[in-house]
Image 1 (cartoon, rainbow, N blue to C red):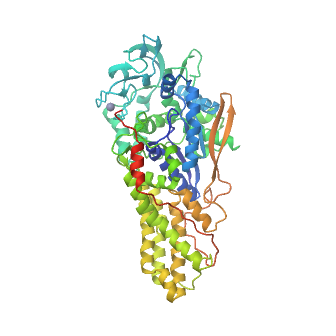
Image 2: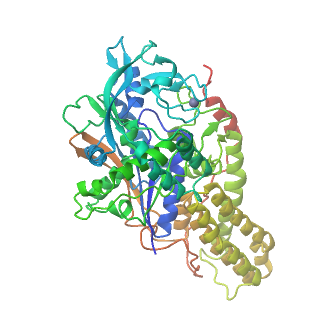
Image 3: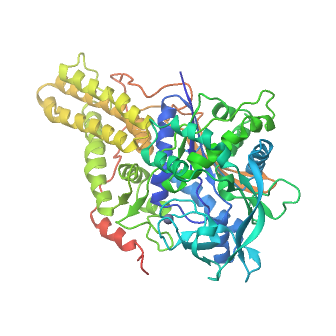
Length: 602
Ligand SMILES: [Zn+2]
């Protein structure tokens, strides 16, 4: 009855801090869905890590005169700090610069080679005559031949999302010194996507009825328009995972080819860290398991086409290399609910122009749940969205505080004061009490179904609608007036309202884990809802790396027990003195925050 759910979240490049667009694009939606499934008692594994390789890092290193490892070592712990403070509950947030990931990625490479899906080809790569070395794709920019974007990366256009072929790039130039690079012959391995195309087509067709239209459009569109072509998976670059073959020294696995393997390698690492070396197979070779990939729209091709191609191409050879005597093929993505982009005050977020709301910076001024609330209501699920400080202010005060926070606060404070800190224990409920409770109880299904379909904005709106229903009920059955004439009536109203709050606490918990945990404690629950995050430093042959994990031991939301259900509130139970869950903001923050934003034209 319980399911195995893998929550695979896009690996952030360790070359810049994480901003609200990254959070709402992948980390937060993944966390919400993971928390929901944990409350349901499903066996959840939520993984990601720092993408420490590739030219996004080496460019930054060249710019700042540091080594790529120093760049990665600066940002990686900041990611870990952000996720802890924002309540992004990774079972494992690790890194691609680990002995484990190197080993898994090299096994994947060898499996694909063994099965005949990697072919050597001499191709042309950018070469700088001035520097006398090959230039990674990212070092070269030019004009996109699909959309005309003049600042397109030579391998992928960020504006239209298309992968680009170097030969066709218009007006190429080197980002190192502005000189014009030339294309020079070099030998590389290519993943034979054209042979795998029918299988990928079938994989996509099987998911046609429930995938987001934009994800299908982009992945099927490429197949239908131009067909899949072999794509190079190695690079002339020192910083990365070496090609595990003799004679290939100085070349490494292409960062996109190996970074997507992180979902697999981090699952293996998590098992090893927990002395369960085989447990990764519960999600990876169990065809009943569901894997959901939370990414932004710029990564759709790599997750809906390239990564499935790698998985299909490996067949059961990878499991065999992991020493399974009866090896099985790996599980293909169940869903890739890619988000669109979040803009900021009507303009595209730009880290380099400081036109961004940075996660850690925002957490210095706001609590995590108000940020998570706004990042969910403004989540770019089906179209680009906008972070607007006025809207943030309004949503916080008029929805989070007014509808949910005040409901909890006035009901619990009043009960605390008039019923000696105990839940009232009415003899019998009225028709209208039972009606309200039926309506709220239905939320376990209506909110839950929406989360399962990854319609998170709708799910949160539904929970908020139910909270409004309780407020409407209290407008009619105002216990603060009832108590003056008939204490028994007030008991019924308060018991009913607290029962509704207890259920809403569960429904809001995936979205607002920190305040729901606080409410859970106020209601005197001894065991926390969710696990406790902790970090540790792991040493290996490449040095050491910090990992973020979650200890589920002392928590309700874990494998094998369903708390996403309407549990009956016991009357006469003592509870703890209520405290305010959400703060009302002053309108002055809108102007203050807008003044912080950098000038994008500067
Ligand atoms: Zn383009």
